[in-house]
Image: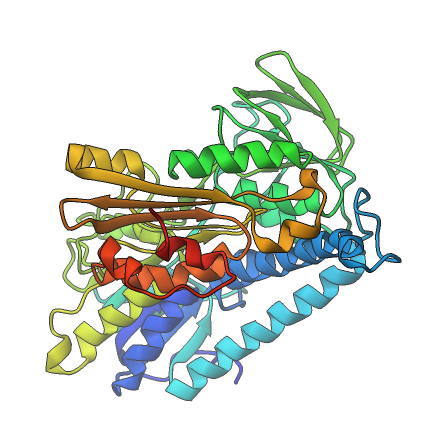
Length: 474
């Protein structure tokens, strides 16, 4: 079903600003309770960051890189005519990209159909809050109209933070992490600036697919908000696999032409010539021009995030905010869960009257090479909270898959369990290694349920797997 050209009702129960995963989830859930719901998206592409320039296309690129690794390993498993273990497999970026983009377009259509099935009116336009019960929509031709509503949800998401030309001369020669998905060809040489999970994932994809990859980080390790064991293990392995990690680096300037060659120079005096530079230095909420000046009671922080309470409520009773725009746990499943719970509470039966999302013990994964899974407190966080009551269990090993590979190609696996108190309640799990992306979901359930180490010990191991390490730690 195509978007409707104009609102079909004089007034709505619920209007959602933004068609990302959280907004769509909240709108659909509200409509399932028989409410009149409109959702407004400015780009004409539903799914937000995750579907269009995030999780989904990124994971497809990760799969492509993963296949390259498997091809290089094939000779060690007796496939002698396969790609040499020491040479990158040839990847046809220009052929793969249109296929990837076609799949994303298909998902956009699925999102549209799902809204239609639930009876949500989908409108294309730029929405601004005019007052606590009115939204103004600017259409693509510049014309405007207003929508009246009882409640408003702001789910407009965020965008990459880019340095200005004043901050870093030549900054505009680089592309954003979103721009990665617009690349029609694979750069032979690339520099990624940043140390967070987006930077790590992009650098891993480029490196594994055969690009000369440089990663510029300000500190000594990547993923500085993660557990130190994860930071150290991944940083060392990325360097081992050929990523040129420039530690303690601050970019001073870029010189050259867009899409290369570009010379990146650091304040430390180092210069590197590449074909693409990618900024992956954080994100900011899209709240500058959504009419918040018309509802001054709503406050934002320095990153533009709307300040809400545990129920996603702003200081205006009829306006709510969730997802990346609320600045907490910027993950698609978090936005979806928060959106559904909000609509359950606002429009659902009595049993949902106090429903809200619990933001503790949220599992997450980094699609690095190798993958990372984490849930709960890091070791420093646990020691700050529980002091000497913390105990660490850890295992370092190589997965059985790597038994046939040369020593230099054997990925590390490190599994870390953090427990506290005499009953050894599990307060953190941090794992890195092949398969950790899939392992983490199940153990996330255990941590959420308050598992003790004894509960893990009492679980019979599945052998031979990497996951069994978590139930056999001593």
